[in-house]
Image (cartoon, rainbow, N blue to C red; front, side):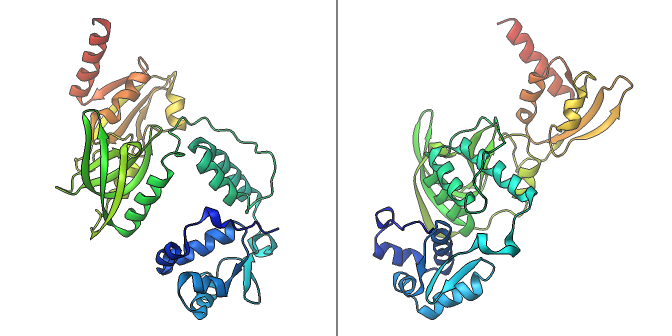
Length: 319
């Protein structure tokens, strides 16, 4: 049964006309309303988006050809469940269940939106999965994330207000990615003044406004993020190696879940202890983890990093 379309939850007609003139935005709007359960009229869509009916027909028949849409005259609706070709396997259903449960950690509004989409793809049943992933809720930051997402996709400069300990400042940044490290949401961006890559807490950003200026993102940013151990990573710094000794009593945990994508095992002793190497760009990428596993982890190289940790331990024991 199709869900009713509530006009009070939408913007004005004039605003929608401005928003959906762009083909990409128009297609996104059509898909979002179809997945919300609406029955759409091609004639009404054409009037709303200020395009011809032929353009809407081209959207449906060409641009959205892979979307399971059932048409009846000039009306259309989503027909996902009726399409045998789109039947989900047990593994795919399990993935959807996991995504549904993971979305709960991002807050009520985020989960409601995610759950509404996911339930279109699977039958309702008790979810057998549970995740304990302490992370900031996106609930109050979803609108901010959407603005930055648009800027990232279109490579647009952003003006915003950023709050720090000593006050708030107006900044111009070139957003590259929205990332989550250790449970916190950040905007990874280049400072518009010098193109130095910095990290900005999403919750501290406000008054976000996209500029018309276009920028070119660095080509290797995805690779730098993939190798990072924590938010302390610095893509502008040359990586260096850290060699660690891992006691045999805990070695199995680092074999099951490596410290980093760059981890490689250099040796394994008879008692199960390991010698591993990881590549980092900043000492704080690895120092908290080493301290967490003391006394089972020890730095072998570089020497200065071992001395830094020893100094911190002495300071703790002798305040």
